[in-house]
Length: 167
Image (tube, rainbow, N blue to C red; front, side, top):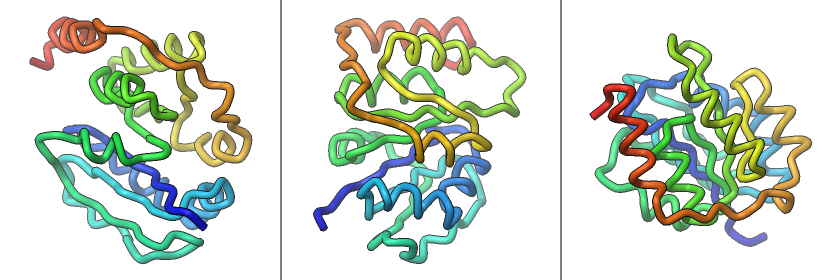
């Protein structure tokens, strides 16, 4: 079996629910059934210590908190599962990687859901919540995703962050 890597990112936020969901045996088994066998977790600003014991067909599971650049992880991934931050979404899409966006239902302002819905409606990604991730993994067809093309996405992400007061 070849090496197929899933990269999970929560950006600089705290999204423990996503990390806890991804490391459930049921989710790992569903990913492994799709051929994935390596998992890299970028867990963000948290004190969470996820279970990185290789299991359910995964040869390695590793985690780290923050890194100035996620480019090497994005470029080496065969699938990216991300929070719905504009920067993370656009970085994955620009790298032409299959993307699943998991929206954080605990956020008060659900602008992330709007972004995920629009990019999904345009055919560029799948989106779900932690509660519906397993079903999505079991039913998704990544070949149906359309490549995302834009040379202005970084400017768009910066503008969204500015409007939302994140800069």
